[in-house]
Image 1 (cartoon, rainbow, N blue to C red):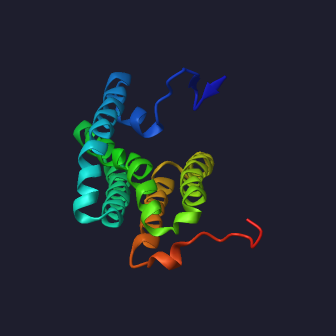
Image 2: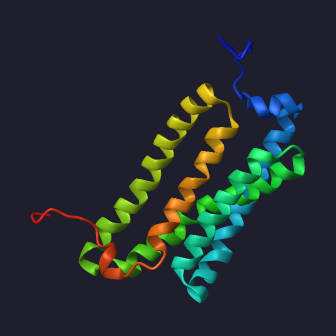
Length: 176
């Protein structure tokens, strides 16, 4: 099987990285940097979310990850990919701070349902977004889908902005 004219490898590189001549070591080191940042973030942002509020912590994390995607589209040097990797690590924060925010805004009797819907929607969005992004990248190239994907974290931050607790209850059938 061939991917864009070269034999398939287990760790294929993005065409944009190939065009710029980055090695697999450089690519993997950016992923390692992202992992290190993601490892430290829950410790810092958990405490920060209690000081400034979970809502604003989530909004800031979503907006930072959107900015990281914009950085990715214009990145040409390795250090810019490191900046993207660090900013992209902020997408891991909603898995920790998000359920706490849901517990704050959802009525206690719907808390279990609210947290499970929040977590499920994150995973469903990741799976659907990656599938759609892959198809779009094949059709339109890398830059356009990545720029469009920068809008999604902004859209995720929007429900947090100015909503009151009673407006964030989850739609439930009268029998649930």
